[in-house]
Image 1: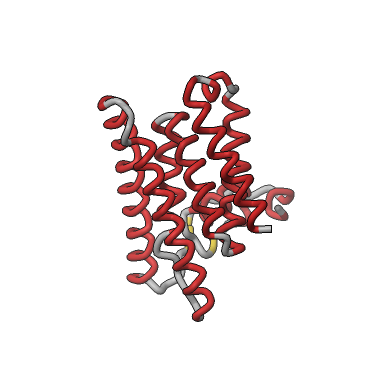
Image 2 (image 1 turned 90 degrees about the vertical axis):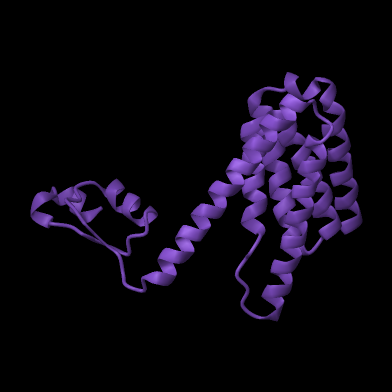
Length: 193
């Protein structure tokens, strides 16, 4: 099974690299997104299954596709790779899996660097700047989250005039553990939601 997956990953990498002649740009944005999303899911599955060689080839294919797609795709790919770095491990098995995922993530970042290196200087600077900016933004966000969680073990309460269920979801996304809802200010149907 791993050999077949490696063959498919290699085929995808070859096709994406051949597309540098212009075939990639002839695909619609939706088609490019579909290819990269499918490869991304396969990449995650290969990492989860422990197929490091397959994951490395898929990472290289995703790096090539990101470079062909532009600065925004390069930035997103950099953030995806950085997300796999520094994972929290529980037991020895979880630490081994996290270490394997980190190795694959570094390999994918190296593949990205390899895809950017032969480009002309202006394009290389633009794509590198996008990757670095995304990396710093991702690192800063992770650091801020870690510091805020470590520094404050207290629960966070949103104390506001909550009148819409969307505000509850919004508060949760911003880290609130609970919402204060004044039921007299909310319609009965909304209160049940």
